[in-house]
Image (cartoon, rainbow, N blue to C red; front, side, top):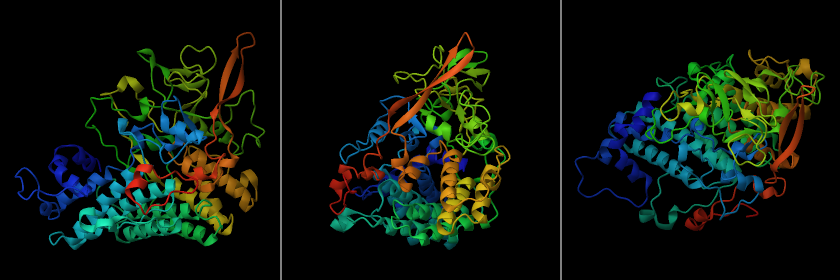
Length: 580
């Protein structure tokens, strides 16, 4: 897949720039006289190698979480944006979303803006162009058409899914639209949430039916990826936000799709939870859909950023440089997430006799230590202290610097061998593939759907226990921890396991909204400020409210985002989400 990404960003893509722009715009035409330095439209669809460049360009719009700090996770009770100018998080957290005050998008630092309605539908249009042109081509083989159209259908399903999870029902568009030739027929009404999910599910199934189990190029869509996305979309459709009547048949449908992935016996959990995100472990057996890092980036001379200089401590000891500014800290974990991590006996901090409020970071489960940097945590050549008075990383309650406002830093997802900001822009980068879908997602999705459909049967227990007993996690099974559990108890266990396992992978916001659990959240994002008593050498912990978290608690309408006014004005058939 690396050669795919590099092709996009180097000379070959320049040849197709005009072609791509033409098919991405309803208003542009080819000139009557074809320039000689340009590939003709027919030539694009005559040769697989050239048509692939068009499709590979669409692959490039999958979200590059590896290179961003702008993600919906920072809107949640898992982590928060460090400074107030990171506007979309401030808008969502305060509950001030409106059609005219929507979440702005940026291209800086390859930011993820998967809530952008207009961008997603532009990518959907590219998929529709590819599917139509490849079908019409008389030069391309049937084998090529079958495989590549299946990939394009998956990609269309992906961009529909990302829009669906934020907005609900969407207009269903399966062909390129052109207002000059079609007039007002290009305007489509929104389908219902269930109709939209059914359309996406159909695309995924059709893709899965034609895709191989393995692709010759790493990173191309496989049968497993299509079935896993199908399961996730059906999970969204079965969840309370889209399924207020609790139809268990929808849950059973999602469970069945996930079970197909499990029954392939191709994927398994790795023995290295943190190592999933490190380049050394690319091509691992847990990866179902990787985002393969495209590097060097075209703008590498202009501030290219990776997670190693976006997260981690603001300042750290890096030999031989001494204490250096390590990260700009775009997001910081919350106390609520820290409290959610289990103890090493598999129980919560309120259940376990191992929890000691005077030593809150002792005897925690391994995922805690692999995900969170806390006061006194080892890091590189020293330790990180967020306690009051520390000259480098003391909690910044005022949020006026890049130092943590919550008392914690993110450790998960990045390679600590890389020297953070010292490596920007041209130093070593972590080229670890980002798991857009990994096998843990499938196990968690299956367990949730199956539990809601039939209760905590043995298959539900087995799925969750695989995650808890992963080699480098190794906490007790559900049975050893709790004995027999009810459906309701299992629901809460699964939700907590999902929160912990997938922390900082941009899943939490969608989980909060689809479960409609905003009323269960704390009214504030919470943090902690440790203090060292130099006489007794004891540390005390002052827990405090960092910022209000009122976006969902105050109004049910905020479970869906408002469609931007600019989009509503373009399509008179669109209806706004309720309450906006």
